Image (tube, rainbow, N blue to C red; front, side, top):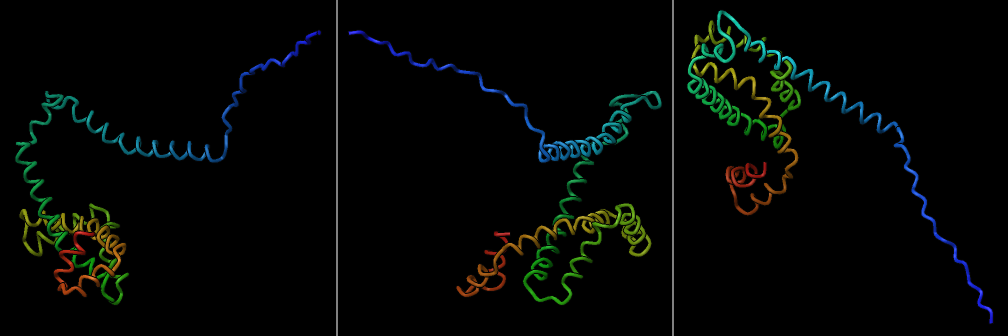
Length: 199
């Protein structure tokens, strides 16, 4: 017998073709968006960097960190800043919690207009608010003191605390409060034990 050898085809592996990444509209938009964000960040940070370098330049025979000696006791300044900020936040919280609850849960007539009016300090330039508060506290109330600073800061930061509380209350279903009231909780207990922890 004659044996015929079968020749099997030899599998040749060809290297896969590496395709160049396609330039799609989506990729171009993503690159341009990221570029725009980085441009804005650099543009925002550059004045602060220039300010730091300028503050370390030579003035009146001193340079570097010696320029900061005139700032006084840093620990005392930091203590007053933290104290004023903390008191302003307490005032904002004490006013924002009931105001937000009333705007969201009760049928207050014209609540959208009231909410817009409460947001006005966000849209007024800081210099205008500062000048108005200075004139009010100095000439009308003669209250140039630490509490004047606290109230001025509370006026400027009040909308920043009110808005997130309003959003949190809108996201909180009222069924939780109804269930607590059905189980015998008073309005204050419902707010303190249900609403406040959830928001």
